[in-house]
Image (cartoon, rainbow over all chains, first blue to last red; front, side, top):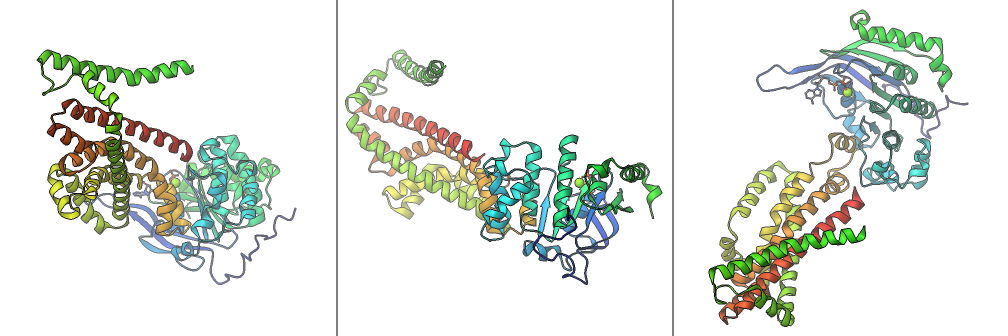
Length: 276
Length: 251
Ligand SMILES: Nc1ncnc2c1ncn2[C@@H]1O[C@H](COP(=O)(O)OP(=O)(O)OP(=O)(O)O)[C@@H](O)[C@H]1O
Ligand SMILES: [Mg+2]
């Protein structure tokens, strides 16, 4: 299988040479709690550079600031100090050009719209005609071609997440942001969706940031696993995963996979060991 | 199965009606009222049933007035809610004005409406609008805040413009609330239309009441009250149906 070929119809690597896909420099984020108390420091000096076409997983205990990092890349939060650049500019510039894709733990679908209309939404929001072929292809990619006319409440949680991810990929975004997209699913469904996402990603190679609690999920999908520590949030360790793609079940059953997973689990148990 | 449902429906309607009519008859008898003070239910029923033609015109007039007021009030309330959503300044200006508008008794609004619209039907419709717009305003305003934070975030990240967010996310989410507003407002719109007709109108059930009283035709005066009550109940039932039908389709 020619998994390594970039076939999203758009040169994703090389054209934007000179700057990274995502660049966080000295990012500090504080949340005001109340007028009198000290603000909460959620992130304390995060530096992270993500290359074009790279898949980075953010791993860490609950409350360590993973979602905050992702929301800043998505332009939903502004850093208190430091800078966040996406494709060489502010996230807002990319949003304006409809070049970001996002999926959250809850599918956040429109309940009155069919699966088809939910996937077509990004085109409508971008003021573009809806390419029917492409919407059909997206539904096919996530295995829901037979459910185009179904509404979210008629679908299972896993199916809803598939739609949510298809919607995130609809406009072939420059950067795909996934915040625990499978976090609410059962282990079996989650494993299957991870394998499918890995296979799709091996074809598309969209720059992706995945936030997750699940070590196996991170190692299976990512080129680099970034482990964070909490209070205040900071990067503790970066683990490159160089296994070739697509990574099937032979990879997740293999020795190397489990060795990395075990090491990262140990690191999460006692993150001070991993601090650089 | 179907029979049981029919029986259930029948009891729902029959039970309150029987209570109302029975209570009315007992009240009139117990106090020994003459027809001048309060006629018996049967004489009112006789008037309604033997002169349906006399009631039909006023019923249609009041229904149309109320419907116009309901539609205009829903539109006005919805527009105000969107205006409040769109700007902090408008929130500060409009919200107290709307609350004030709703808190002034209808009777006190009448002279203002006569000043603005004269004494014809436009003034009557305007008075019903005053009654209708407030539930629409407050319920639609809260409906616009109904979408989950993550759905709003998705719209933001996808680069949705403010108008697109409004039409594709917020307004559809406000539809169920708007339907609740219709259900709440429908009966009171009928009754306020009648009140307005009573005060300033030249047609409709309210005017028919005034007219009947002035000719000492008390059974007919009470008949307009009975018919208006039935109309208000019917409007509530219709609004409930509309709500259920629409919700089945949109959620
Ligand atoms: N809008 C906010 N206002 C105040 N505090 C916030 C806000 N968002 C996040 N925080 C705080 O910032 C810290 C990091 O939150 P964040 O959601 O990024 O954690 P997380 O790593 O994604 O956790 P989880 O794995 O549970 O989702 C937490 O202590 C949280 O309470
Ligand atoms: Mg989170």
